[in-house]
Image (tube, rainbow, N blue to C red; front, side, top):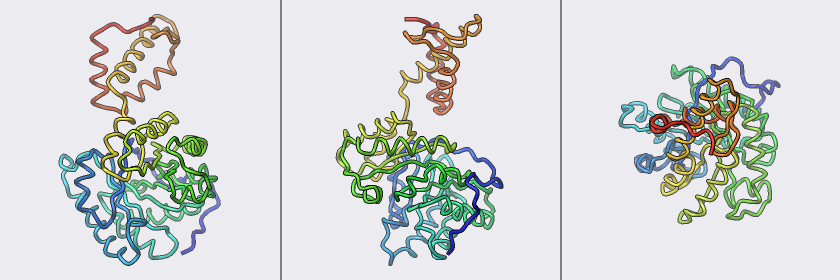
Length: 333
């Protein structure tokens, strides 16, 4: 199959803008073990990624494809209250031939939140996937652009061209750098992985900046492969959050609660956001543009950031606002 596409580098204009929810944790599940999906949901994963690539031997891909397609259909038929918050993604194989296109056609149906595309090398790969997804959506009667596309940057060229890849289609979301030990990225770049992650901080930071500059929503990072090392996982997740990532991909259910906790603001953080907003708004009503809050000078820019945090965390944010409303805003300390 040819991957030739148009020469333009910006997102396709014929696709509507679709809001993407933030996802803290995206848990890989082998495509041959769709019966593990209830475990992923019980662990609290915001999303599950049914894997048809590395987790499935070539001889078993047709059977796994049918199994995954059934799981997606069941997700669409399950009442929302029973399904919980977990979104369903599928990692397909590279779209190098018509077998890849047929795989995409089999899994794109109601109930699918997005497609994870491995081994992305350039914007052309994204444009091809975008067009094929558009055809699949039309065939299934789905809204155009509704299926998210998550390109995996697993080659040196793909990492170098992250910005162009991120701009190639507006359906792209959750783009980031995955730097697991011994994986495709380590082999492609040649670094030596360490638990502290210092050798990949610059790489993860640059990919994140490319994603943000391209307007990609909700960038996520990963992976942590040491199943029993939860302290190491927490430190790595906190590092990713400090860089600006909004979530992580995971390979084991035991990692999900740690990741969710790291990428969720705690009650104190939410309360502080609400109080900061109240302090800035009180100052604005008095004709001041900035105010001292907890020893720091804050203004509307900080209030906008705090509002975004509250807006993304629904029920928790309402609790924080209720708490802060019961006492006067802290203006200086």
